[in-house]
Length: 369
Image (tube, rainbow, N blue to C red; front, top):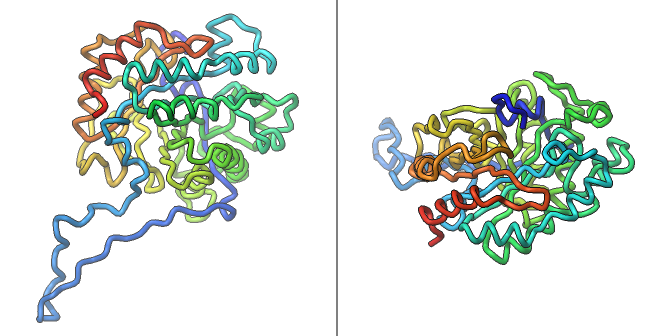
């Protein structure tokens, strides 16, 4: 990250997303039944639904986030441009492939297990246009050769070491084209701003769907960044829209949970009934709040917060005391919510000791039961 104060999405500069909607199943939303009057008087008002009736007929795909085994976790941004800046690398596809090949998936799983983390979220890619997994749809649409998608499927390779330790795997992806790759932007037909971006969305959904089908049930959650213009892009009756966007992410796993990030909002809110948990991007976790919650949800969507332990997203030294990290996590857990903490990683995926110490304190405060 750059030294000045930036939100994680300032680094992205723009984004949006979605699939050729008609080719993907849309999420079916069932309505809660209305209680019928049992009064012999036909003019009497209908009876009130019993208190045990579900408050909202929403998805349970993110219900695992309330389980003590998985309620808090770790995110890492493993990105070509960030690693290039930190290690003064002249980035190209050969260098990127060497970096991805050198990421120690077993070591990462062991470290996460040692601190008691329940889930792990990793970036597929972001602004640079380099991605940590192959994708033929991306290559075909952009025409970029050699491909900037890695030969190794780092996401798939993480699954088994994490599964052996009962840690769930999630992925991060922007909702728009990589702003640092003008060739990709042009081929994907991306415009940054409050535009419908329909052609882009259809192409992006094809790319997302390929990754989803590649990983299947191995990936249980998607966190989509940069959904800054939901009215312009996603809240249309016809696809591409939020429903087709979510359907693309669930193409390989219908139970995969999805979140759409509108940016930093200190009051936890859901932006669409087509998401399963709140993105919850927060730069100042002391300010986070949630209102009108029920059963760990806001308007039917699982409460979740994503923030960072370093000076900035993916970099720096710890900015909080350990007691603060525990307190901020407890605040969200008291809402029935889940928390993901971003930490920096070294070139081989190592999390340094100061951050491991804070994560271990979280494991002690919120143990798996």
